[in-house]
Amino acid sequence: MARPAYLFCDEPTSGLDASCAVSVINCLKWLVLDQDITVCCSIHQPRKLVFDAFDRVIVLAKGGNTVYEGPARCALQYFEGLGYDLPLGENVADWLVDISTGMVLPKSFFIPNNRTAPESPQSSIQIMIKDKTDVNSYPNNNLSIYLYKEENLWKTQRSLIKDYLCQKWKDCNLKQGLNITTQSSLTDQRSKNLSDSPFFVQLWIQLQRNAIIMWRAKEEKLLDTLLIASGPIILSSLNGIQSLIDRPRYNIPFWYLVNDKTPPLKHVWAFTINPITGDLFEYAVQLSCIVGVLLSLAATKTMSSKRLEFFRESSSGYNVNAYFIAVNILSIFEHGLQSMLAGIVTHILRCPISSLAGHLLNFFLLSWQCAAWGHLFSLIVPEQNLTLACGLFMLIFNLLCCGVMSPVLYRDIYDKNWLAVICGFFSPARWFVETLVVSEARCLPEQYGFTRSIQISQDNPTDYYYSAFNFIHVAQMDIENATKRSCDGWSFGHLSAFLVGAAVRWTSGLLIHVSDRRKQCKKNIREELFKNGKTLFEVTLSIFVLIGLYAACVWSILWR
Image (cartoon, rainbow, N blue to C red):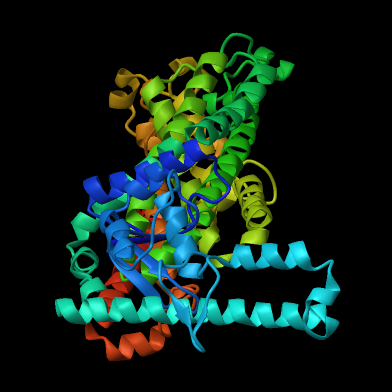
């Protein structure tokens, strides 16, 4: 893997027609010439074009004994020197197979007891078949005994031919002063240099290779993108165009309108804001669940399909961190595009009043968190249970911890620190829903109670405490900024969402070194830590970084 020094192929052309076999061999030849990779193939019955593509050939007799090893173009000359003749029109490769199996004999070959062997084993068989009807022509009228003797003669002939060819090959190497073992052996210098190459070199190679793999699976990726976008399309089409201010359904009691004393605005807002934001809350929760589940499942498929590749990379001595980071970079690119496509679709169908840039950034951070959880589940859950486990996790936390519905509401989240940490860390919908609602509400005019004009802000610096946001219990940690009217979106929750996704991904990066170490052909992590000081330092540093990330998550959720 990762541009190996050697590539072993077990009969790469088996089951292919002649044209496809040539195409496969040409691809392997390109690896040799362009990528400097040594390709070793076991191949049977290659056509002439296939055989001519090989630089060197090894001909093996029964028992794995070498009867020739050298340039492919010299094989014909070598065996002709031993007394073999290539029949007119015969393929050299087929001829070599016949020689190694004893089906073809040299011009002069003798069996002990001064008996000349038949020209070929086929001639013996033909004679026996031709004359077997005349039993009286065989000694003692016993055909089976004759056949048995002839079969033993054939076996003896093939055994002697094998010994003859092996001895000739050894004599040839001794005359040339060569040792076949040392001649055929190659140093693994290139492989050693690649596995010991700098981190960023390996990272670049991994990025290139995974990008090629992604491009080859472009039809599958395109279908996944269309499926992810289909959820928001159906949901947005059923909900229709967003109507925050077009048709307000106020439910103000009559006694509020005929009362001599003007009621405080905060009491009026209690009856007006629910019709405005109720549909928006419901739509945001539904959207976060659909997109979140689909993105997390797509991320699990990305990591689980590459698990075998990871085991190969790790057991070959390559940098696992470079591999994991490369997969994450391309995953961020892939799922980020999918989420932003969903954001564009909802922006077109729903026509929100906030800016498109803030809308798309909110969707990207949703994919950032959901894909991170999908990668983590790919490492800790068996592959056969991965889809159900990840889907159940995303549904439960996106529905129950989003802050919109019981048992966990935004009022509870802002009142209880421990609940705020749990919801902020495990529920991507907690930040997505609040950001979507606040971004839309703070774009409304002042008379709707969510925002305040600049003049009112200067006259009453504490006026934001009476904002309508207090009645729906959102943006409580950033109420002063949220009440400033703007259509650029609300970005207070973006930092928390980013830190949570980073912490989960860093956790996955640590767990990938611990999980399935036997399949990675590595020792127990405890033994490696005590024997290797460099590994101990790297793990300790990674744990401290992880603790720092979790502390930053708690700070951004509670005290920022």
